[in-house]
Amino acid sequence: METQTVGPMTSRQRVLAALRREPVDRTPVCNPTSVATVELMDLVDAPFPDANRNPELMARLAATGYTELGFDTIMPIFTIIQESSALGCDIQWEQKDNWPTVRMRKPIWAEPEDIKIPSNFLTHEDTKCVLDAIKMLRKEFGDEVAIIGKTMGPWTLGYHGFGVETFLLMSLDDPDKTKLCLDKMKKSTVDFGVAQIEAGADALTLPDHATGDLVSGEYYQRYLRDLHIEFVDQIPIPLILHICGRTVDRMEYIAQTGMAAFHYDSKNAPDESMDIVDDRISLVGNINNPETLFAKGPEDVRQEVYKNLEAGVQLVGPECAIPLQTAIENLTEIPKAVRDWHKEHDGKN
Image 1 (cartoon, rainbow, N blue to C red):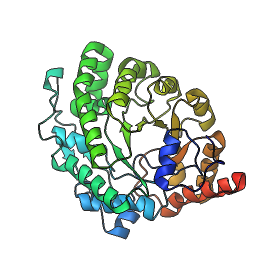
Image 2 (cartoon, rainbow, N blue to C red; image 1 turned 60 degrees about the vertical axis):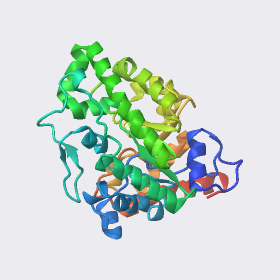
Image 3 (cartoon, one colour; image 1 turned 30 degrees about the horizontal axis):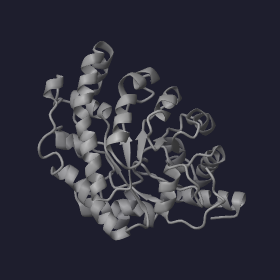
Image 4 (cartoon, one colour; image 1 turned 90 degrees about the vertical axis):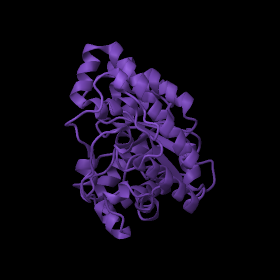
């Protein structure tokens, strides 16, 4: 990706160009998941759990990624459970210093025929909150900054609807049944994604947690590659696939999907990852969360930023939703390091 041939860009222009692997004035700093922290919640009086369920608070907290941290994106969806709540899962909303989760005591589905998308799926308070927050952010920031939405993939919804162990055992024991379940769940992914486009999103993160810790690259090819190709065809803005863990064994398949980008984990080296995707898909990442952003200091953050930039990674940011107690100075170091690297290498900031 070139950085020397274009004039100054807005954050929104910069992000969208990088997702298309076009020239940019500098590498964008991108948050495809969440950079919300307790400190930022206190700063703008928008704490969890309310910021996950009140659109005004959701928008206010999300905006700090741009206004306080200096990222080129705003991502207002801090959780992975908004759709699951609308589908009928029992949610533990937690408090300010913890993530909401799906209670697995009573799964909502046991068989493929149980999977139904409720008629109020997009008007349920927890999906409507997201749509309203995106509308507010688009109205407030116009074309200044890229607004990234998020729609969960069917593999993740399978974990939430059936329970993780039950769903994984099904994928091992009954591939046809698993594929039928995925096919029935995909409507919610598309419907929520399209609704976010209509609300004003510029791009969407699509997390589908077939993680390196739980399933193989062959599983990704068998169950998800073709589904992800479908999503690219049906959701007409750039999609950023997110899968945690060591994923080099499936990056070749991911690069075949037509997704705009892959949000990749720090368990994968930037150089080896860039070699595999071979300019067919942009990479986003991969600053380590638990060790670097949470437990170390700005200089360590800077070293990881530089490693990504030197490998040619198109968008730089944290590898996943950051720990809620992460220090702001470590997050602001990411855009500072990007600017300094570009000053050193091409004289631009």
